[in-house]
Image (cartoon, rainbow, N blue to C red; front, side):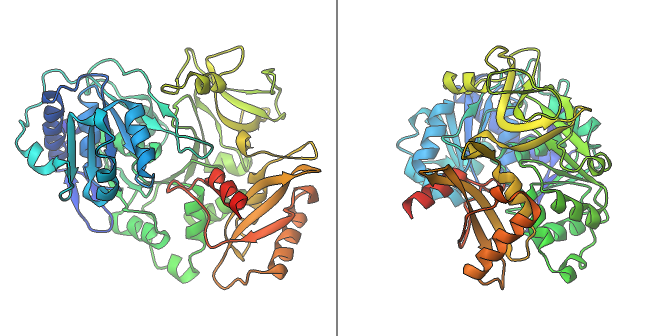
Length: 509
């Protein structure tokens, strides 16, 4: 499906803070006009369009223009430095670059370097030096769809928490944009109960895979997307009430922030319209999820997947309550857990998590070494996102941590996520990250970085309290040796800890 298949007066998207609305009729017309502009500039199926924007309704117009033209859409993290943006624009091979005026500083800084995208350079929301006016350009274009509208796809880049972002360029799907739905749209409809009457709250950054792809799936089905400019705990629950949101998607950090709201703030808003609260991006601490279910009811549905699109697990609240901590069973792709030498492990044993597909499901663009590193040594159709975990006897997956974050101390593997989960709801902890730091005797030792909660007094007394708290919950050798109190932690807008940046901060200090 596509926007033109929906009633033109239906709301395709609305900005939660301002009430700015984009109807399906407007989305259809503007995406067709932009598709015309791109086609007349010489872009053809397989070419790419780069988009640099904060959360804006224009993102949906650019997305659908690309997808109805057989093009790849590459949404770029606007928090990146200019040279990092230039790298993604160049690596993706983007022939067009569309930017928001709010990102003018970065857009102007990369103008001379992003030469590959010279066929079309447009800015919306205001003038940007070196870019044409998006609004004026598409207004001059025909609103009659092109006769041929082959389906395009997303070409997105991983968050880069463990190095340079990696681009995932899937094969273009067959058929026209109005043909049968893609995998995510089918899963959203069948597994998550999305219908044309759904109102979907999207608080995450639109450059991230889940907000972009899920919002597009909602629009393919005919629902309405409520987009937040950026996540704020109280504004999120207020948006649920104001817009009668039925479906929403969060990351665990957002749950923690909402649980930290004072009870009288939580009680102020009616969230009874919510039927499904989806969460993903990182495993959710057990106690955090229990508290959310206590608050919202058994409406939480968790999934585990990645930008790579190589597989997915899912679990509803009732099943999760019977198996706390699981991220579910496979709903797309089969799960294999393997030792370092590639040997498949039995239930209960921890190893690298692979998704098995009938064919090799993805490749990292321009990076065959990273592609091979993600493949099983003997079965290239088994690919990993770099996570460690185990299966129980019924095939439910439990994630332990990311391989890149594992701390090896005295030859013993320590998984930071387990320690972070313990500290997530400590009353003195607003945010926490755990990393391994070099030690000449043990190899590494455990260090916790804590952003104190309001009113908490950082210092030796609180450090001792935090270490003792961890030792009371899990084995003592896993407890941090030191606690560093910090003003903030490096997190992406998707809630992921940027541990490479944290380690760099520690090294500099």
